[in-house]
Amino acid sequence: MPHPVKTYLNKGDTYQFCTCSKSADGVLCDGSHKGTEFIPKEFIATRDSEFLLCLCKNSTCTPFCDGAHAKREQLNLDFLLD
Ligand code: FES
Image (spheres, rainbow, N blue to C red):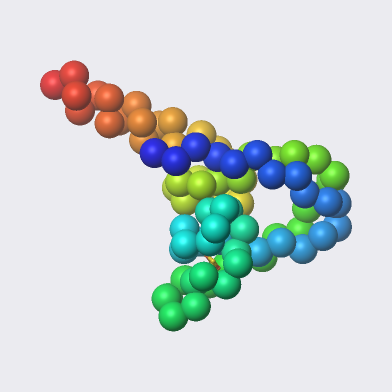
């Protein structure tokens, strides 16, 4: 399961979060979604800081990581213990 990507964001700047997983870095849209049903999710950074942006696309608070990738990994490990 892909782990989040640490990304520096500038307060007040508008970003496009990649929802298709086809962008070069996997987290910020670079237009690679063209021709698919996906559209990027626009958001504005609330402070100058590094943020963990979701790469697994299962976070409930995209664009930010909520640990969903780790929960999925745990589920996968549980499968191996059966
Ligand atoms: S490249 Fe993924 S949404 Fe634009």
